[in-house]
Amino acid sequence: MTDKTILEVQNFDVDYGYGDAAVRAVSDVSFTLGASKVLGVAGESGSGKSTLVYGLTRLLREPGVIVGGEVKFHLDGEGEFDILSASEEEIRKIRWSHISIVLQSALSALNPLRRIGREFDEVLRVHDANLSKEQRRERSEELLALVGLRPDRLRRFPHELSGGQRQRIMIAMALALRPELVIMDEPTTALDVVTQREIVSELAELRRQLGFAMIFITHDLSLLVELADDIMVMYAGQIVERAPAKELHDAPRHPYTLGLMNSFPPLHGERTELEGIPGSPPDLKALPTGCPFSPRCAFAMDKCRQERPPLVLEVGTEHSVACWLHDSSYQGAVPVELSKRLAKNSGGAQ
Ligand code: SF4
Image (cartoon, rainbow, N blue to C red):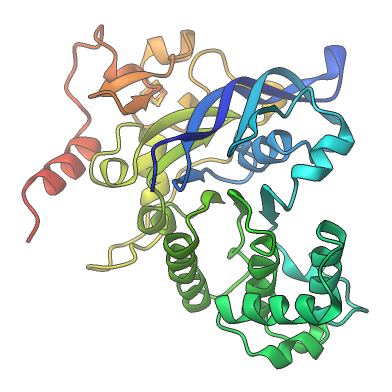
């Protein structure tokens, strides 16, 4: 493990559409990711989390357009790679071999007419013409073993496998060329809860073994608490809270983060009644003035409806939040729902 930075993102903006019709889908996102670290990105549908990673990897399609920012990928021993100014050909070279992506639905990502072995063979052949057919088959079997699948799966068609097996195939393919960064866009969302948990713990183990960095996107914050080093929570295309995973779990500062936590059952511990977040995700074409979460926030004050809160450091040097409740100008008490959670988690582990 090293604390070297692998990815640096500064003031990244993505629009959907052009000119007056454009809506900002990702707004002023900045973060760095350390080599071998896991960054979790959480938020409801439409929060901008998938658009963010499609933009970062230049997989965004019209009408999505990157309108600002810098994205630097640090290649081991090869210096800095400027993702936004690279040509399509340069980008293609680093995809799969240095940065790979696993999408939500393995069924649509795999060609239904091809056996799994052919998919692996093609990825390996395109990126290393020196490998013999036999070497490619051996490597494919090794990759299947990594994700707990038998070698005979190479002879199957996608429809002959379960959802969990197909998703494991996609994970194995993403690891085929030993990338330094793997991006997972809701890879377990379509699966049942037991398979989701199994895949998440297998991923944690693979990361420990192979040492790649990962960005894991999900709307289920409880999954991230197990897997991630840091978690970034997005709402209306912006980061509203960022903190180390345990810190975020034990002491969330943003009411939206608290709402997300209350929307999913915890992985361990006592069962609690799920509350969810009132209202619906925001319409990006008609965001309110001030805090974008204000129409759904139980703690909204006048200031919230007038001024957008900036993302500022709240606790120590690693926990940032965009919420007026944590601004030095706020004179009131921390709302009881947030303080109850703080008190529960600072009361000492049993
Ligand atoms: Fe709620 Fe105001 Fe904080 Fe926004 S700034 S999350 S509306 S308390």
